[in-house]
Structure formats: C-alpha cells, structure tokens
Amino acid sequence: MISDRAVEISQSAITQEGILRMENSDLAIVVASCDKYSDLWEPLFDLFFKHWPDCPFPVYLVANQKRFEHSKVTTLLSGEDRDWSSSIQQAVQGLPHRYFLFWIDDAFLVKKVDTQGLLRVLEDAIGRNFSFLRLRPNPKPAIWLNAYLGEIEENADYRVTLFATVWRSEVFHKILKSGESAWEFELEGTKRSCKMPRFLCTKKEAFAYIHGVERGIWIRPAALELERMGYRLDFLRRPIMGHRQNLMHSYRQLKSVVFHLIPSRYRGGTLRLIQRGYRVLGLRKSSA
Image (cartoon, rainbow, N blue to C red; front, side, top):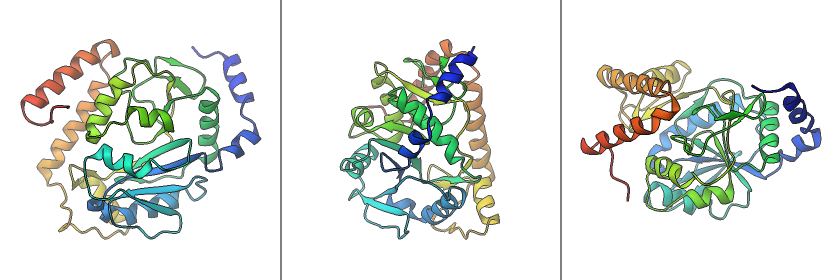
C-alpha cells in the first residue's frame, strides 16, 4: 500500500525548474519504422501532432532510404533493410540524447496527451536514476513506489518492450543486440535485463491510441476508423484483414488479456510452453 508520506515526498521533489529541464533535448522520441511502412507515416504524424501539439521533445523517424518531409520530424536513414536491431542501432548510435522514448509506426494517437503529467512522471523517474520506464502498467509492477510509478520485478515476463517506453541511452545500447528481430529483442532482451535495476512502469497509460497493422496487414477495425477520420488508405499496397483474419486477431488479443490474468509466478512456465509450441509449429524463428 502506498503511504501518503511517500506521495508527498515524491510530489514535493517535482519542481517547476525540473519540469522545464525536461523540455530540452535530453530526451528524444524515436519512431521505429522502415521504408515498406512509409504509407503509414502521413496519418501517423498527422494524428501524433494533432493530439500532442505541445510535444516538447525532438522527434526522429527511423527509415531506410526514404525521407519524410515534416517540419517537426527528422528522418534517420539506416541504409539497406537488414535485421530490425541492426537497423535501429545504425540509426540511433550517433544521437546525443540521454533518453529515448520509443514509438512504433502503426500506433495512431486518438486522444490529447497530458504533457505536464508526463513530464512529472519523467522527472520522478530520472530522480530515481531509472534504466527503463514503460508508460503503461503491463506487466504490473512488483511494488508501487508512489501514486503513479511502480518497479517491475527482475524476472517479469516481457520486462523489455519497445512501444511507449523510455530508455536511458546506455541501457538501451547494452540490451540491443545485432541480428535480432523486434520480437527477439523483447524476448531475449528481457533475459539480458534481469540483472539491471530500476525498470519502472506507470500506473496509468500515458497514450490513447489505436493499433493499425499486424503482420503487414491493416487491422480491420483500425483501418475503418482511420478511413472514417478521412484518411485514404491504399488497400492494394497494404491489404486489410478479412473477417477470418480479424477473428484470429481478436483471439490473439483475448489470449493476451487472459495471459496477464495468470498469477505472475505461473506466467514464466506458461510463456515458455507457448513459445515452444510456436517454434514447433513454425510460427516463430528460434533465437540465435
């Protein structure tokens, strides 16, 4: 249980000077993408800046050879498309920022971002010398540190994820390994992180968004919602899920919800069993 005293101490540590300090270039937003997803960039950034007009951080887009022309976005070219980790490493290795907030190219904002609330959380995490901050409570933390921050236990499943997470730069580079896919980065990176301290999460989701694409195909409800907003999507370039595919997508979402209802002490064995089944069925590649 969180004590009132702990909350009072935490809140008193967040000064206006501290909030203003986060409005410089210490932190950058990095959107992980590649050229074959360039059809998502226009609606992505249109909605991003519509719902986060006062975003105080520089925004970078990782691509291969294509540039996205936008006054608020800097394109980082990683060259020929290789494996996911190598491309990300090539793109961000020269950036001068101490912290990265990672975004993905198929997460479309749908509600206004509370910038001041986010800055308060970031300042608190920085004051705790955090390594990693997930801006949503999934998985739930082992302990709540105050009214809005918790600490993820060292052996938590999917302790490492990419979307809507803030990383201390040197920690990210330690965990990133060339040759891995995004899925392998989260799976194997979780193992590599187990001895690294101060992996935190927030009590509330910082962003309201719709997930647009799965396995290269438009998720049907997301595509229809974007079209309702006025965006013209090219379904010849990127097809939309049929009803059967959409049903399977809903099943995977339900499976994720059920998985997170399993008590944490049983999740590791359950997850390993599922991953072994995926590899046997050829649904996942074996990690190197």
